[in-house]
Length: 290
Image (cartoon, rainbow, N blue to C red):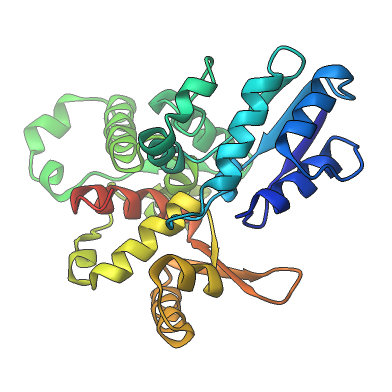
């Protein structure tokens, strides 16, 4: 078994073949046909795991060749090698429309979405390590229903408030654990008498995105589809000057919607703020950007 995670964008057949040759423990092989022949005769690994294959394309005309070659290699060597790949949901949706990528993978598992019970369990297990008790606070509407409040024991009230909180949390985060944790931390009102008080759930309002320029919205959608982008990759996709690409990315970074890290070449690599990924994605869907 061998595994590899794609961290930088691969756009050409040559880059792909060089990387695959290294992954598979082969001397550099210059053509897909030669690599297919080698793997079908004497594969070194029976299982090959490729993570984040959404880095093997750029959403621009002519930049799908590397992905097409990878799919060809996988389909032609499937009897000898068990290929396992991971890809972001929106990249999968895009490539399925363009290349019918689903036809190359008969077994598909969606892993990004957790159930409401899994979200609740993950948050409460994490909280349990703090050693504090929890108390869920009622919303303003419930505070006014005195008769209703007196009808239930405190335990029943807490159970109802907890259920309501996690119902609304799950609706807002759609199974994304990072966004769920972000919302949970924002819901903490105070620590008092060995208790953590949790405010009623309040969903973040991202309707302000509709006021953004279309290229800014498309930048967000491309960051979701590609996982991350450098300034030069953003330039290639949009055919912008370096200054315009930097202006858009800096604006989104200043708004805390995206972050960046430096790669091995000292380039800024931008990606969606993980805590805000799901709210941004939902609003882009509402705006028909996806």
